[in-house]
Image (cartoon, rainbow, N blue to C red; front, side, top):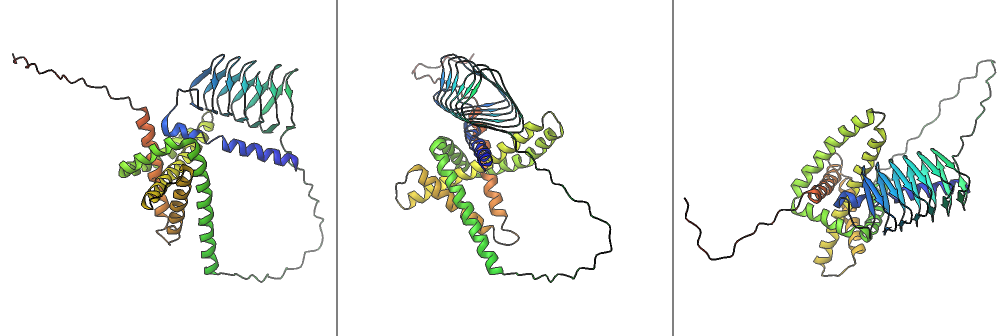
Amino acid sequence: MKMISKILTSLLLLALMLAPAMSASAQGLGDSLSEGKVVFGDNFVLSKGQTLGGDLVVFGGNVTIEEGATVKGSLALFGGNASVAKGAEINGDVALFGGNLKMDGTVNGNLAMMGGDVSLGETALVDGDVSTVGGQISQAEGSKVTGDIVNDVETPTINIPAVPFGPSAPTAPQPNIKVNFNPVWDFLNSIGSAFGMAIILAGLAMLASLFLQPQMERVSGAIITQPLVAGGFGLLTVVLAPLSLLVLAVTLILSPVAFLGVVVLALAWLFGIIALGHEVGDRLAQSFHLTWSTPLVAGLGTFALVLATNLVGLIPCLGWLAPFLIGLVGLGGVALTVLNSRRPAPVPVTVSTTDEPLPPAS
């Protein structure tokens, strides 16, 4: 039981590390070291003496943390390569999903891995537990792990006894199958599921508003100012993204990248719905002339939006259309925000303020 709880804790850590990826989806890669850093297929070096004030998330890139550098948050590696030099510190947990991690520094937290390759050097120190689900981990002499090391759970062997030959078994009687159909109970169960989904997404919205409020406002602003364009971008993304990911999945080398693309697309869809919920909560607060905190605005708005959408979704035949359109608009808002963040700033035009007459045309 202890082993299973440790593995589940590690998987939860891995899921939580996905949250900073929405920051990159909404505003691109930031240059400030006072906050977290998201690396998409790029090279990033945290030089000697530098301190990263948040989490470090790597999607298929190459990251080097030099001697004397410090990461105040956690490290999540989804493919790619990461190297932590001797004397470097990570003051959080480390989650590895594929890729390679060479650790010669100190991890003040737990280390969880699903696939990939982890190498603990002679000076490596993991001040916590190490959990592995697939992949390989190697420890050099001198490396230290203060907690427990939980390896893969082995599949038990089941011995099936041979069936002896004998007389034919008698014909079994036909079972009396009773089908209970209660439309009222099924309808109430659907409403309960809608409430449960709304509460879960409201909690995620409140959590996201604590760290990603500017990004949520940018996405919601893009949706409000250009709703039709956002919906068109969302539809285009839904049509083209699966085709591109299918092409990547067919190639064995790029299949992990295809999986990461599916994860990022799903998170962008979810973040778009949360951003819309934040806008709904803001409108509700303004209509009632109330001053709510940002997490409360995001939570109540997302709860109202998701609950109303799911209740409309209970309508037969056409009910699925409302959740689908809301998701398309939210996904398109995220796509518009990403494009606007990568668009170069316009060059200012200098306007002459002198009253001198213009020269005559030749």
